[in-house]
Image 1 (cartoon, rainbow, N blue to C red):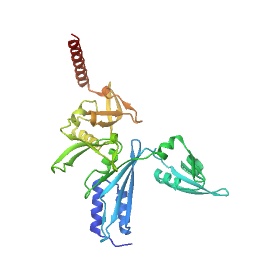
Image 2 (cartoon, one colour):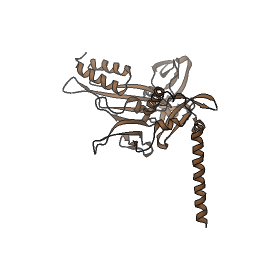
Image 3 (spheres, one colour):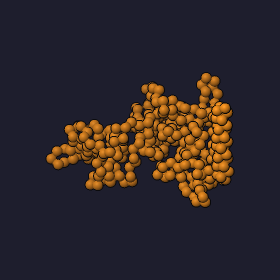
Image 4 (tube, rainbow, N blue to C red):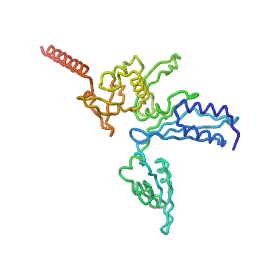
Length: 330
């Protein structure tokens, strides 16, 4: 075990904590630093609406001191169904004469990558144990000859990946990064205009429609309040329970600013139901989803006065269009 600079250790702990890394990641980082490893990665996995997100922190030790540095991390969204409780992945490699080598893994990407490196006859499976496995893929003489239909996107697909740069624990947090690579918007009140040095507020999302420029997607910024998306006002348009309690409303708004998809209770026809709520900043709206992910028509949850106002506005718009059409026909 090598020597360690305790001040440097505390600084890196503070950085990870500020970024929202898990306690397990911070503990693993300390173990590696105390072991004197030159370079190492810390990875944590977060559940996602569709699949999971891997967060990877790369640490490097200075060539001239015992200090470690971490100036960026990556977020990768894999659309892979998470393991059920008690299940694992198994790579079963034939050793001949009816004997097999069995390797157990808990991370899907590790399982897929290690399976693809096999050279003989092998099988990738999932289950509580080998006796109760479900085959996901198989190969013969190092050539993949089968991948189950439900596993093909995971096996052949590539993740949505973005690198986020940090400075002393400042920058996009782990929750924000996780939600950005899932296609959602997050709110930052500390964006910097590098031309003028001024700080501004903005709703941010990754511009995935145009693809990557280099290694990353560009950031699509909608400045606040210039863009005109008033979160508090939009929420008040809907029959969401708890908004009359300032603390609960602020907690809900904070979750949405992080890009989360919180569960809310909505009322329709006097009946309560729990739905997932997600921001649609681009359209200055919110979206509702059932727990299974199926989208719901947002208009059905509008408050009656708001709905009547929208219908009246639509009617006026139609009358205006009709009048313009009649004028042109004369």
